[in-house]
Length: 547
Ligand code: VG1
Ligand code: CO
Image 1 (cartoon, helix red, strand yellow):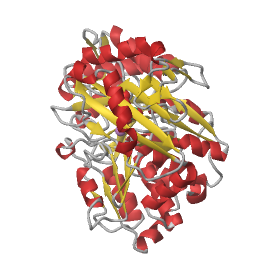
Image 2: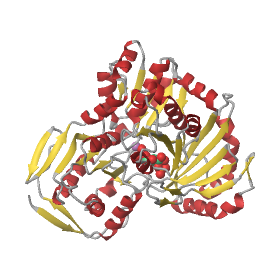
Image 3: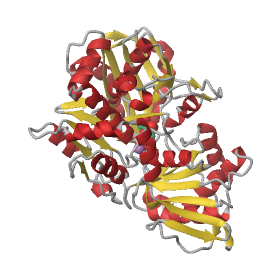
Image 4: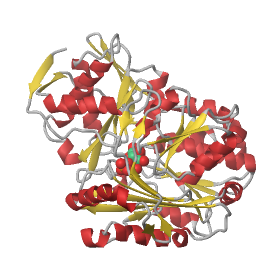
């Protein structure tokens, strides 16, 4: 095997965001760009690993978007040149993010590269992304992503093996000197992990007795595994899983499972022919949307319901949970469940990487984010299909409808009325200015009115990891109005164009009265947009997506 050293001038913009490095596909395709990031990641891994990590497998999978195949071939060559002895590539190149996490853990790999820009659209004109996950199966923590960035800024050369492309569409092994490239069946390990948690026989009986659902895989990574588990193993009717074939451009859609982008599923669930349960997942299969007939389950409520019901409805959690965690902007509904059950509840910054340490230390079992992400310590990523199987188990056990389960939950615990407003495609400078001004005015905001409420505390969220004491600051501005009202404002770290401002509104009502969420939050929404001078700064103040 010949190894070439390629010289180039370093890229200065390879800093991973909330979840990996995301750029426009064309930008990613420029000469040396992808190889630079891979070499920087490998150099960073070297700093944190002693011993024989090169002998352990390195896993490669992706969400199937445009450039997935070519990127895989490039990574194989750079990894071989850097001495990796066992490279494991998902057959067809498609493996969801939770699936990759499961393989890394099962195969005791040193880590893995995940080719995904998640819910961002795919194609030559859209987005591409790469994430590096560590040996626990989870996203590299900040100290590693920052080391990758530091390496990339200084990098002037990378190594590449001059070998032929590997056929990634055929299961098998190819040897390159002493190194082995293994193309593996992407369905096996992940199915086993899920099978160890859920009672598949019980769920199969549930479908046999007439339960109906629709799963929209949005032409993305969950398609093949959802078909395998829901239709083949659980016996749901053929056609239950739709858009199951991964496509490089996700069929021209945003593979984002929310009310806007999963419109076809929304229409079905609000129609006369709705099945009993509806669900969708995103590009890389880590997000989920849960729907009942004419009923949308807010992700914060979904997390709370799962945490509440796990021990009684899901075999893998029958001994109870060790604790729960949520990202800061996520609705505090799960906190009430934790309190009732006497569990610890952790509040982390946005992004799954912050849950890893807690799960590794056995501090929490179930975690979630408001952005349609829920998961548990069975892997170290959020897991869309897992959430769907949780809901199926709860539905099968309780024999209630989705709406009844959530309403019963609200009656027991009270309800957090919640919305996230995404203001997308904003010009960068004014967006940064809005945040900077708000940050500077925090002390003076205390005591001021925000709609009908008075701001009692205003801060910029900072997190100290309870396991390794690392500190992450500037993680979102909180305007807190007493115990029950809260507004959080932050800029997205996953976009590739301009800025996206996310504003999270939350209001608690102890007694559930079935009010409309818009009515409960409307006043605060108006007041917040005025406070931020949204119209003045951006010319308009309507959000692009509300979830
Ligand atoms: C968004 C979500 C965050 C999620 C991240 C990655 O980040 O808000 O909760 O962890 O995407 O999810 P941001 O910085 O744009 O708000 V995924 O499914 O893109 O891997
Ligand atoms: Co995702």
